[in-house]
Image (cartoon, rainbow, N blue to C red; front, side, top):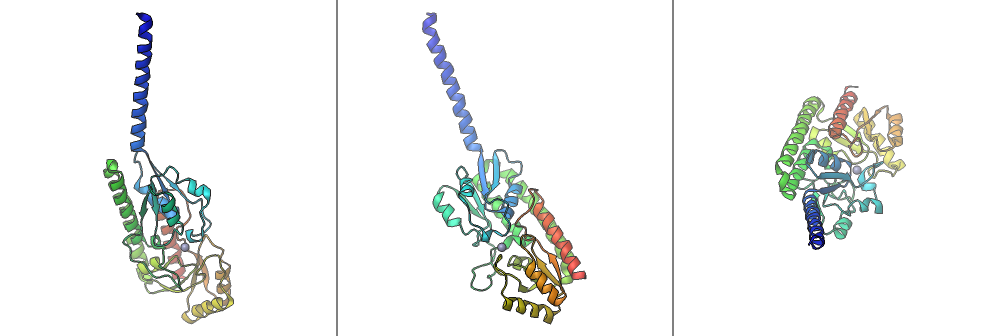
Amino acid sequence: MFIRRIPVFILSVFLMVCYFVSIGNAASAAKDIKIVASFYPMYIMAKNVIKDVPGVSVQNLTPPLTGCLHDYTVTTSDMRKLADAQVFVANGAGMESFLDKIIAQHPNLKIIQLSAGIPLIKGGGNEGDNPHVWVSISNAIIQVKNLGRAMEEFDPDHKELYAKNTADYAAKLEALRQKMHFELALYKGRAIITFHEAFPYFAEEFGLKIAAVIEREPGSEPSAKELAETIEIVKKNGIPALFSEPQYPSAAAQAIARETGAKVYVLDPAVTGSDDYDAYVNIMENNLKILKLAFRN
Ligand SMILES: [Zn+2]
């Protein structure tokens, strides 16, 4: 009798273990959502939208960049991050040249393009649309709301939390936008010279005029002719300030400054930075300080 009961006992313990393991797996499969963001500004937006949502994490696809994403070729190790991801957050508007490759290789990945619905500015030369939409605070707010809505749909169990996070972060960005509008109102119509084509949306938002761009394609030094043209524009318009970017060397800007007497300041398009929830806000606060300093001088 006793001997016959042992297998029954073992069998029931075994079945119980199986049952709990399967419950555990089902629970974690339903709960864990791995998001990969294409690059830094999308990563910071996603961090804010998924803040404190249980089981949801975000990773930056690209390692700390030394420049803007459009110069970047994704590596196999970047692509490996997508292996067990469910959501890919992209800026869109042509910023991720590798987006088609990702869609083709990961047909089940939910792709969220945050620039959806934002009117695009045409790029210089023969380029397509300018993809640097997040550099305008108003556009960043639209992008955050696009992501919040998409996550509410994708993970309805945490709908309220996504909605709350989105509203909180959008309110913070709105306060920043209003503060910048108020403090920059005095300088509407001012001409600025920027480094690469990262600032048209920012300039449009605050009524600044981009008189010239030093290096349309980052990494390619301007030709002597292009440099001479920019120097001419600076002299003719009496432009006192040139803006370089922290991600790129400022040799060309320095050369123009030497020729014209204009000063070089650094404006940050927020393509690199700290892991802080408020990193984008802090970068823009600093840009505001720099602009006021440059325009006052
Ligand atoms: Zn760029």
